[in-house]
Image 1: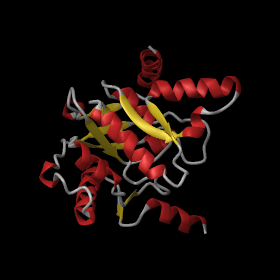
Image 2: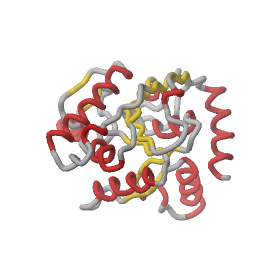
Image 3: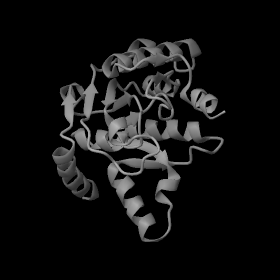
Length: 225
């Protein structure tokens, strides 16, 4: 019920203010497990994704988003929970494993799990090297990977700006990618890299971003130094 109310209210608001253009929605399977893998340019990418996809989309987020105190904390917990966010302590030593196992559980239940292979938001709008968790998830579960691109959300919520702006947004989905040919090879690092790079290649073509063969976390650290 929370998701229905949130999607109805914010969906109407989003359509009125942003008039998002959605391309390739028919490429998302109507049932069964699906991995949505795309670029990540701003904080609100997950919100737009959850609101435009007809099926419920689950994704991981920092547990601090749902552990706040007082009225504000309860409202945030309700909002992110209704949006499909599953809180995970990603800062801990086992954060990556917890995120992977969470995604696996969601997919084994026949649901949609969204992931940003870059691992963090792009520090400059370019597309960075993907981390191989996306490949492990696809090979462990056999779920098809639907690449997607968020275009224009960085103009809606520019980095460092608190108040969203009115700007056109496009959400573009590509053809599902099937990696069954690599079944049982989820521990082969060369296969994992090949699968990840293939996914990122499709995301790049959908988004039109410049590709950088470097992890976004490393680029962010170099920028801050």
